Amino acid sequence: MSMPFNADEVFEMAEQIERNGGKFYRAAAKKFPVVGKVLLELASMEDEHLKTFADMRAELSDTEVEELVFDPDGQAQMYLRVMADGHVFDTKADPVEKLADKDTPEEVLKMAIGLEKDSIAFYAGLKEAVPGKAGKDKVENIIKEEMGHIVILNQKLQDLV
Image (tube, rainbow, N blue to C red; front, top):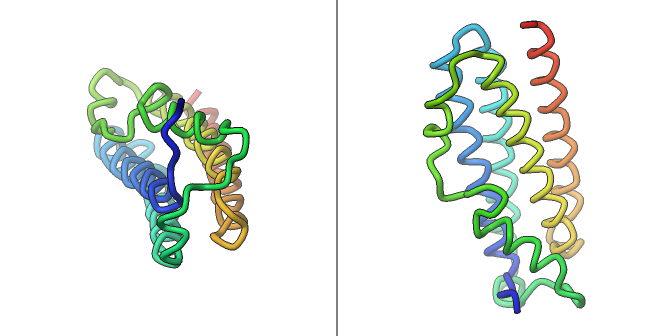
């Protein structure tokens, strides 16, 4: 049986993903200055997503903080638990450590694309677990922006090849 989340816990996980993303992009920009500008731009975008999730979390009512997210079949809860437990990506891991074995800008861009895909997968599950009044539309906008990050990263990757 999966352990259910409340909306506050789900937004807390989303905030950590965005913190990790910003930290990763800043560290990668230092290590690979040739793609530093685009990576710093992505870090700034992740900072904006963090602010959006923090604002959404702050706007939760006391009831929404305490209530478990509506998930009659339990699938969104199980999915989010798998993600949160680090089976897809570990929100508690230091994202900078992931750069240690990357030697080229191409490698880091490919890795970043993978991380963005993981974020999109998490946010798709998050969207299903968030009530409309708690900001489902904002989650959808962040998913679209994360998709845009993949396009930016892929274009930069193509420019290098």
